[in-house]
Length: 203
Ligand SMILES: Cc1cc2nc3c(=O)[nH]c(=O)nc-3n(C[C@H](O)[C@H](O)[C@H](O)COP(=O)(O)O)c2cc1C
Image (cartoon, rainbow, N blue to C red; front, side):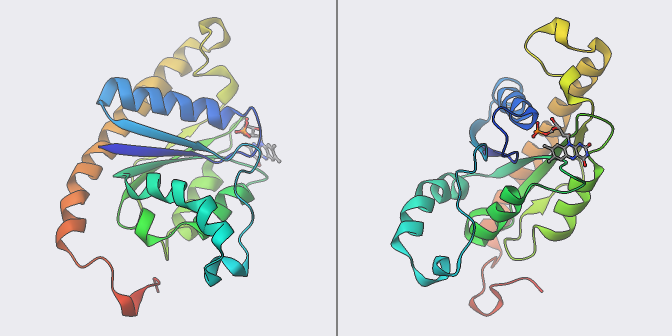
């Protein structure tokens, strides 16, 4: 079982990447899952352009190794900061570049990140508008890491002990649910006709 974690912040370093690394460690240690972490720090992916649809060899070469990891994944964790009440543009770009052959009909858990009391908007935005053509399946369970600077730090003295304990426990439990969906949905993809030439895009 392999779960890929996408860290959606362009900042380097970022709190989202800190959270993504904690998620990665928890998947490995608590759930025995193989992981791949892809960080959008410093914008490793160019913005979508028309040549992507024209078999551009540069795009093909650049995306091939990432596609390979995503296609081999049984599920995803999408970590998104709230930036001006939105998902960062680089993360929305990610959803333009990868499609149903990499993400389709695989479960994904949203982890939103806020330095204060925000974090609800990325959850709403991702659930509303990032899945139509790629068919990623967001599970009902999500996590909003509020006051993120005070939790999940390696140095315990930087943490609010109560909040830190709560998020560590909740993240691990939620990832167990994600793993359950990942196990359950694999046979579904193998038996149902999930790709149809006539219906390449969602409605
Ligand atoms: C451009 C920008 C806009 C932001 N807007 C919001 C916001 O609307 N709501 C919020 O709760 N935090 C906002 N923040 C603060 C982030 O929650 C904070 O930076 C947090 O660490 C998560 O972002 P990071 O993963 O990039 O570090 C914003 C941060 C940036 C850089």
